[in-house]
Length: 86
Ligand SMILES: Cc1cc2nc3c(=O)[nH]c(=O)nc-3n(C[C@H](O)[C@H](O)[C@H](O)COP(=O)(O)OP(=O)(O)OC[C@H]3O[C@@H](n4cnc5c(N)ncnc54)[C@H](O)[C@@H]3O)c2cc1C
Image 1 (cartoon, rainbow, N blue to C red):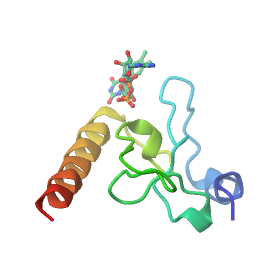
Image 2 (image 1 turned 30 degrees about the vertical axis):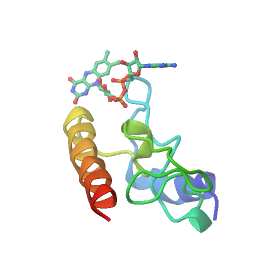
Image 3 (image 1 turned 90 degrees about the vertical axis):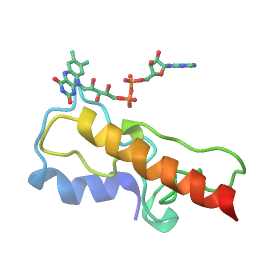
Image 4 (image 1 turned 90 degrees about the horizontal axis):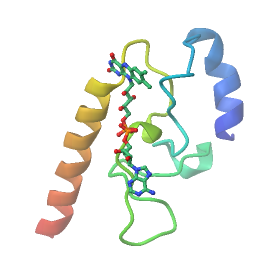
């Protein structure tokens, strides 16, 4: 399934206007579902490259985005710290 086909399924449930809140161009999803980054923000097929911004949201949230951007930063910084401990 591509991210586009996932969008077509989810769109009726998330009818938010994405004009000033663009998201989802690097979706955090399994690669086989069209994802670009894993749960730690690592870009599939690369080394030493992570994405940490609103582009990793796999679906459009119903509320404003900034609080979720902060939560994403916390989540990915935890993943970086955990990786550095190994
Ligand atoms: C008019 C407007 C009103 C909004 N109001 C709200 C609101 O009230 N509440 C809310 O929660 N959200 C609001 N949003 C949405 C919110 O601002 C964004 O969703 C959020 O800032 C996205 O964060 P981000 O880190 O993904 O991207 P950004 O905040 O856009 O950060 C991207 C950063 O990358 C930098 N950058 C870009 N290209 C490069 C490059 N090549 N090299 C280095 N740096 C680069 C940019 O300078 C920028 O600092 C609003 C958005 C708009 C446009």
